[in-house]
Image 1 (cartoon, each protein chain N blue to C red):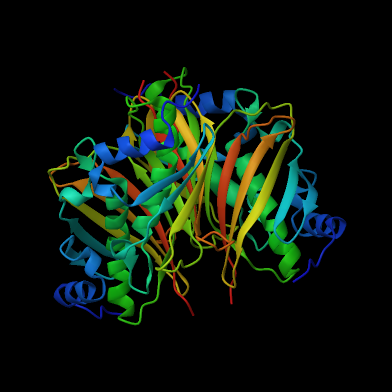
Image 2 (cartoon, rainbow over the protein chains, first blue to last red):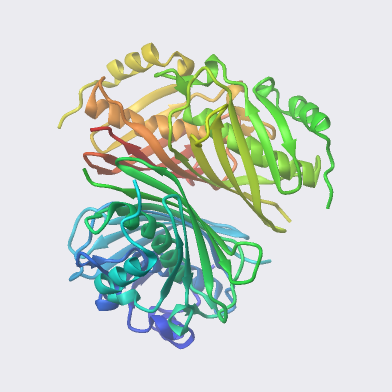
Length: 138
Length: 138
Length: 138
Length: 138
């Protein structure tokens, strides 16, 4: 199975169907097994303490994994997130973009399982780690 | 340990320190062991398919549990979310508010563990369920 | 959909196909939406510190939820555990049986989602809480 | 911080304090950031379908991560597992040993966060993946 979108096409498609996240994300890499996406951190992503909010980090990992599913299944993709278990390990700066790296562990007929780690750009140790499961309807 | 805030005081305090979520949430109930919070669903909370986005639901459960911690520990509360495992079970309508009900399972010296269920207002079965852990620094 | 087994029949069936757990569990209650199972704690379930080991508690919650699936789907049930997120909150005594109470949150065509809480018999507060997901093949 | 045990010393110590798992595990590698442990699969680890049971896999990932904590903190280690989120992705053969590879993502003063993947020996793709959190008392 090869990819149905280039990064450029995928970015345009997401902006078209999902205007709420326009300008938030930049897709950096995408392949059949992995993806890398940047969260362009701005005021709306912050929480008290000048750090990035949990929901913004959740949003980033979910988006990063979903890009692989969309790229593989195409515009008809109806996969939905069924579970996400996320660990927040370090406090990212609110002045730095976040980069998520996602690895697909299983791309089954009905379930996709992915791992993601989130880095504050330039830091070596991850700020968060997530396990995600998606269900693909028959 | 009694509560350090009324619902009114807590709402004002959150709006003061966390302007990004102003107008999103309404605290409906709060006690030492439980809380109930409404997400006033609007355009920014939606994703394609006229449903509420995963990050918005995450934001609701995290806020609902955090309100109990804040009400018990007061303004000095420095508790941080360390883990959230969330299951998305049913697709909520994008035209209906969501209500989260949180129950505190453990309020320890260093860890707080909570359960939350999320309902589309008026529906009997939950759309999501979450397990949350918070770490309280010494 | 009604239940295909009585407690007695279900107990006998499990002992027949799964001899490794013979004598470990006692099914106390079973319905379409819930179940309650006892772990008869003995030496093999303990870990250092005279407490019940994590894998034994995991085994109990998995068994408790699976009993409902088996009772609803019958002997042809091929459901498999796909995810379990478990929080260990209090240290149970190694001299007391454990009781798990399971609630089914969703019994879908392809996914079953359940909640379980585990109590040291006679204690009011739970020692562990688990979220479980099962996949049912088409 | 260097390791307080060699593999040989650690193995002997575990067998001494935790006789219930004697002969089940073989520590293959251990460092400050990672570990690798074999589960010597035998009858007691199996479930119907000639595959390894979920609790046995849980036991393996928990043991693999705990070995690093024990090796770093020494015999006084009182760390306890507080959360494990585990995804079962593929069905391992009941005739093959399992190998878990654990990576420490954070070794904090009060919390340790680890990732583990489990392989059926000789297979390239993981059968399970787990996220584990341990609490270290002050």
